[in-house]
Image (cartoon, rainbow, N blue to C red):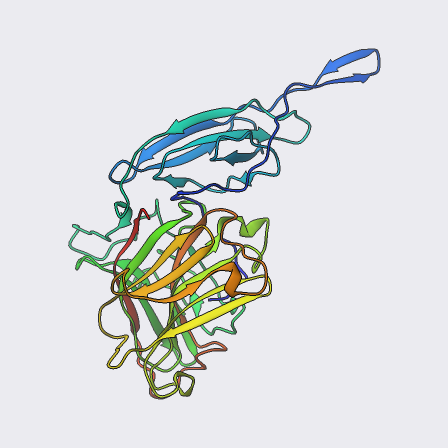
Length: 374
């Protein structure tokens, strides 16, 4: 699912991020009547909150206003060439986080370091959103996890919808008829609506700036709509998209789908897993006999260093494998964490526009999003 927008951060790590070596401390400068000591950025703090089964979500912060934070997870000394901190990240393996802060006019901070040794077995559930809702009424998806892309810019795909955030009062969005909600039935609903002729609304939820991960197995159990012009997707983008714009940040499409009767679907119903980067494009369809996207299916990705695999319904049912040796172009998927996106587009360059057969409202229903250790 291509995008022009930016996105999140929380990490499952079974390997390392980009790292450097070296560290700056206090510096003195000559000037005027004598030496002046350069101020130093405040060292980052490392805070954690519990995830699941021993995993934690790590947050970095500095009291220096406007500071930029850099970190490593392999024990090496962080520099300004290291991974830039964008958002909290998930730690579910044994590693050491080291971080520095930099700010304009200041020397780099001292290094803050914290080791983690959760010793979590392979295949363990370490993070999830089950979309539980005990209120008895439709509720806002967890705002600590999900934020939104909004507007009707077309998002690089000539999409036709206006994406609406929870509670938006900016027309055509309306808080009385939300496009995304955690239902009293315990499912996330993402709903495409047509409030007036030629006007469409929907939702695009993302964890950008709130949560991300690198490496592990992620899956979502979903029901998808079958209607001309509907384009549901479950995908990820690099946390570094704000500093390394798409496609260099990397895009991982766990699932995309367009209407089974669309001519581009070649007469059968399918979903697709794909990868995107600089001069890097790969996509493989999944279309076994009798497959129906309207039925409940689990769509998943196994992410390891140098390899992306996609599966449907069980991690043993891998239908697509991508590695740097099988692709041309730059491989961006080992450079850092990615954030999660779930959306339902209306129209666009791939599915085409809605027509007289298109059903409104149409919806994606999500039972859960889960992350496991490799």
